[in-house]
Length: 283
Image (tube, rainbow, N blue to C red; front, side, top):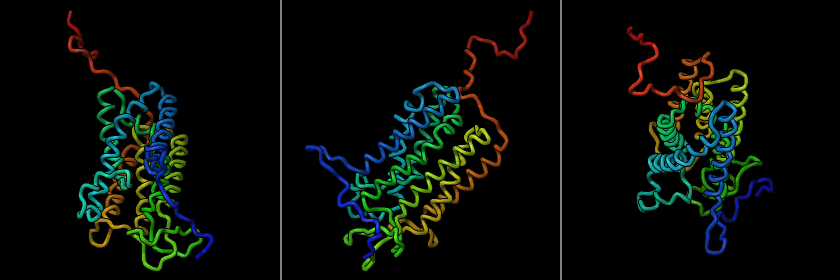
């Protein structure tokens, strides 16, 4: 056994009295807080009202968690065939990032439309914070000893308990794919921040850039993972999702290239008893 291998934590749950404090949930909460703080600063800097990002997170995050769990169950159904009730045990881990993003985006668009906020401007404000939140959340996978990759002898290999359901007999260490994804996400956040300052991205282009870059990283990381997942023609379902997300985000960036930044608040519709401004009134 190499002394350089990364040891897995002995436990991921601590008890404060009768209250269980789970590392996985704690990482998600910390990630959300960091993303909200970053998003609020960027939103206010663009002229938005303070507190708008926090208010939106209060609704979009739960939708994202539900979407992430549904996506995980759909892409890894065999884990719950014998005990379907365990699909509700979110504290044990298992959140599909693509489903989480989709759930959060849908909720965010609805909220923005109802409050007169331009969805693209809000998406750009939160774009760097989302991958940072994902990176923090991936630390929770470390405590749960999940989402690791194939066996490896690299010095940064991860030790996993032999009785782990995804462990390979005789393997000493595995690729820490959750760590690879966390580091990739931090790099994505850095690129989004740089590109936004360089080209003053607007109309959702910062968020589209995040999606495209995340999809690239997710594709090569998926190639290393060995956990059970639905496959089609030998490829994991997540690979196809990554390709679709990359192509869609890239197409949007090309289509909207050169667009400047928009106002953060939409123009309110004219009142029912008001004449439109461009209609000439008679004598």
